[in-house]
Image 1 (tube, rainbow, N blue to C red):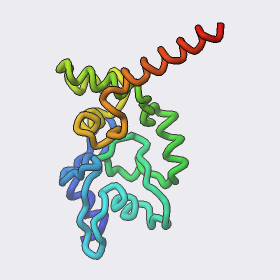
Image 2: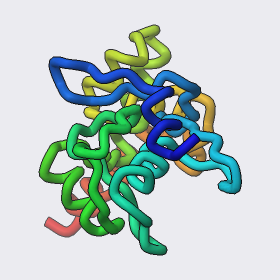
Image 3: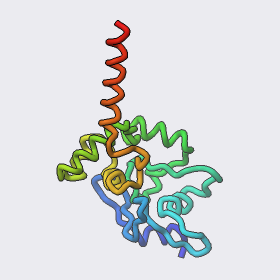
Image 4: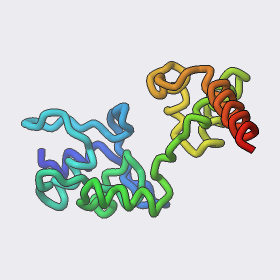
Length: 166
């Protein structure tokens, strides 16, 4: 079986958008998993690129013009670098929002109120998968729970010093 046949047998075209939806397993990264003989674990869109467009030079990424991670339509795929991918994300509004410590504290407070994680993620413009990672201490664990208290105490101290000087 050729690589083209391999891809075509494992996807279905979506008429309204032109994407070819990968029908096999999807990895935790959100991309299709492809098991190709002679290749050590790879992703389906990279296999599709190789099958329909040719080799992928070392260090190059395969980018999606459609922004659908499960798409393997070669017409939606192009080569790029980390830099071109970052620019593409920025232009399309997909770049990750940088959270500030105060945002993380507010997220923790909202989690304590029982607000749904999806709503919290939308409020802060972040990937919904980030919220449970904050909750479970996988990210931002260096930020103490009592962050707001620390900041307000520092502000109070600065205000006291300003009053003393004036």
